[in-house]
Image (cartoon, rainbow, N blue to C red):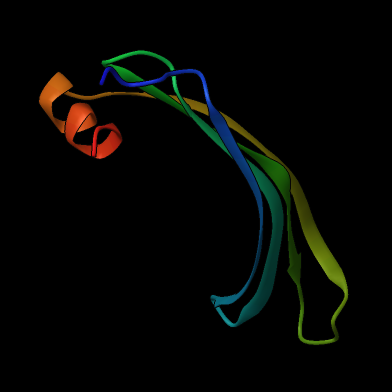
Amino acid sequence: MSPIYNYGCRGNISVESIYNDKLVTMNANVYFSFLNSHNIIYAISGTATMYNEKNEVIKKQTILRNITIVIELRVLDSILIH
């Protein structure tokens, strides 16, 4: 059985954390897909927001990253072939 490529997975991430005594939230969409036998693309887009101690927005930043991961064929085949 040969692996099937170009099937994508989508999801959402909501994260809340403390960074340098500031509350930071991130709401993002994630996507990944096996492009072929050697490449996976991973994309994340969303917004990160930093708040002060009064819960006022002090910084807001858009996140947009596309990452291609190159892997060895034997690793990908072991993931996709049962």
